[in-house]
Image (cartoon, rainbow, N blue to C red; front, side, top):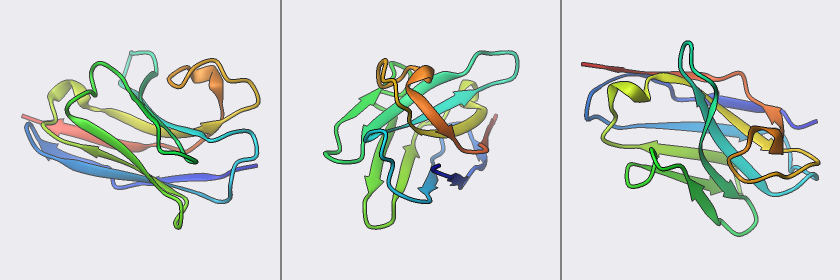
Length: 125
């Protein structure tokens, strides 16, 4: 089992920045991918960005490209999501995830078996 703990969520004004973190309890023997997903009320959960913990390869969703940056610190087993130029539609619960046994793409929910409890990001006008 890999336990994931997110932190850093909060309220930020439109156009502002926020950095959220996710710390893993141990290395994941299933595979190197870790990812951020988000879910707004009445919306489906969507992939935001993913990273390989072994070589720092990244994938960003179209909505995240140019504004969000995912990174990973191996010494701390911590993944980050730096979010800039935040918009109202970025308001959501943000979840981190670690790869499961079956890999179906970096931003596919069913690629991930381990999930954090979520951290709320609210963008205000």
